[in-house]
Image (cartoon, rainbow, N blue to C red; front, side, top):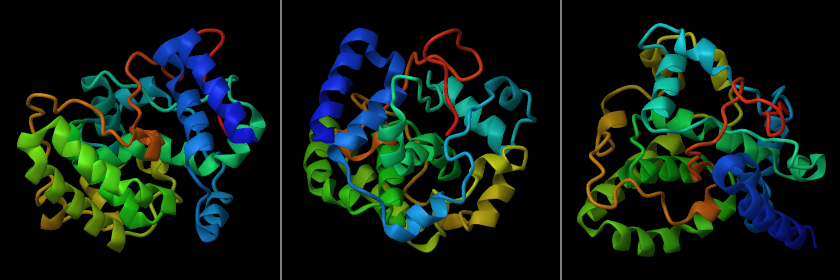
Length: 253
């Protein structure tokens, strides 16, 4: 029953607020379409406090170039994005059921930076492959057949690059310790390459088939399986944490 309730609430938020409440929309979308995480992952997430911290973009922009935090905020700024934000429109009950997807949505763009994956379809496929390799939830893999059918239709000239990028991300995800349960935000002040080395993401394999590529026609679109990947919902124009007035401010969980 809660899925139907969340579906209608998501539609109402989209109609009233558009994409300015994309964080709430992503959580409600996950509540409708996606499943629960693996029990061991859920247990690890319980040790994070908060699971969804607020992002101080001003502080991140003040970090030296080459640090993880500065690279992350540069990725957001250069692509017209904002960090994942949950407002008072998301009820505590919905948030409690979907803390794992909220965490994944928060770290989605951080993974773009860590994997050197661009914002285009090729980069999205690398992050999607990485998430499947990490085995966050079976529902992510269930959408893979749809993704493999639709993606080539969006950018047929990039099909080969997208497949290679997906395979590279999947391989990295399989051999890397669970990223979702790590406090990535604690490493913002560290050198990006050092963070990658610590996580086992450095080396030649990181850049094989997965370098940031020019989007080309249609390359800037989001992957079609956005329902399978709440973090993949781009947040263009969303009010940013620490910069927003009044209703819609980001909440920490």
